[in-house]
Length: 133
Image 1 (cartoon, helix red, strand yellow):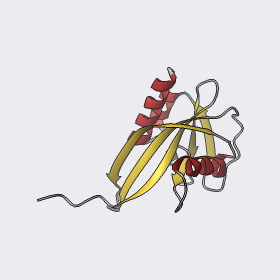
Image 2 (spheres, helix red, strand yellow):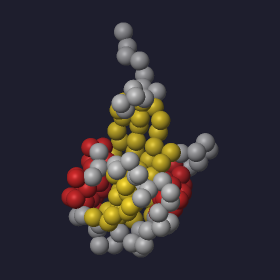
Image 3 (tube, helix red, strand yellow):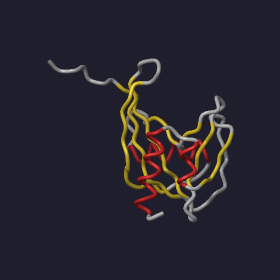
Image 4 (cartoon, helix red, strand yellow):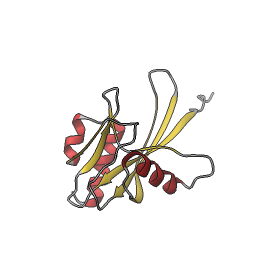
């Protein structure tokens, strides 16, 4: 017997580093924190979709690097979720928030432990290790 396959919404997140090594976290109006990113639109190239989401949410033009972490889970409504965290870089710290978020904070990778869920924290940790931070 085989277990049923996970049917999941796919999203991409950016462990988005600025030149000094801080990473960007965003707060939603329900007081939760997350990395920039979102869903892929039909027909989009994955890296282009993430670059678009970063630009829409923050106003930043990012260099999208390699995926560093993936996670699959079911949320509290029993809906499947699958997320990929990419290592990304920007040259500017000037954020222009969209209406999806109410606050943006640049912080050290270690400081994200207090804000992000486990999958996103691990993604930041792995991205920071690759960068040697």
